[in-house]
Length: 165
Figure 1 (cartoon, rainbow, N blue to C red):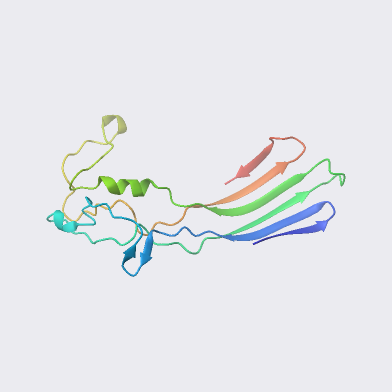
Figure 2: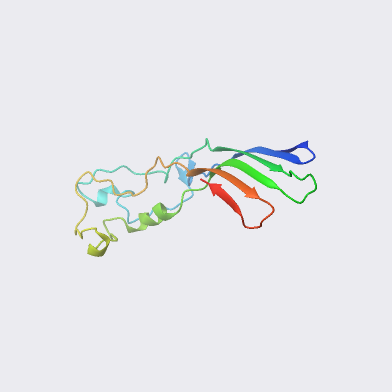
């Protein structure tokens, strides 16, 4: 939803509200539109003795409260269309990146991939995780990432501007 209001011949106000929701991959009622990774101990915990896990039914919960207001002004102090000063504010949201989903394919017991080594400062440790460790790498309470953006631009010199986040 967006609107433009011409306050004066040389001053324009734009304002709006956007709703962003990035739904998880769950249809509900026991139906899913994603295929769990069959070699994951999270999906088949009986394959790993001594590890206490619960089966998952979705990657993360849906975050439904992502309302992003936006407001901006455009002003021509010369009143001749030769200069424009613009500024605005917005709250922006984006979907969760896919790296957590790629991690599900490398869960024990069949295989485990770890990026470790002395050059990364991570000691190399061999073997499966200790008893009670949750091996599903995605936090089910993930929130959609957001940013508050404030910007100001001078229309007389292309390329000159600032955005503060």
